Image 1 (tube, helix red, strand yellow):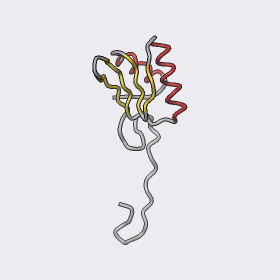
Image 2 (cartoon, helix red, strand yellow):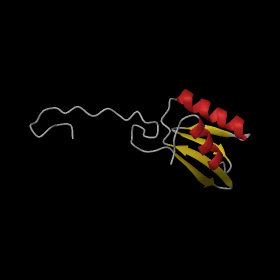
Image 3 (tube, one colour):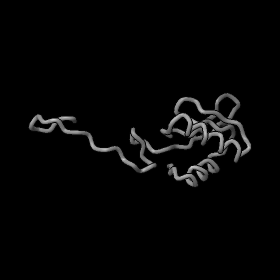
Image 4 (tube, rainbow, N blue to C red):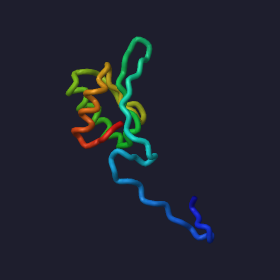
Amino acid sequence: MPFTIGGDWAPRSEPSKDPIIISTGKPVKVRLLKRGKNILTVILNLHKSEKEMQEIASALKKRLGVGGSVKGLEIEIQGDKVRAVQDYLTEIGIKNH
């Protein structure tokens, strides 16, 4: 609520600086999805700039030897690579649940 009981303007609290919590309050998720015959590992709620997302996707693709892409606010990696992606995110300082 942006106003106090007395009717004064109440500024919003500062967003958390913790890398696990993003601006929407949702933690970073790594999920396995099936699209048709394809299995994808998808990283959700990773609110980084487009350049940072491209860099993370590129590093993951090289490290795992698979294809992938950035689509909107998600990174898609081909195959069942959930554990490897979680390990990589932890290494670069992004905690996930």
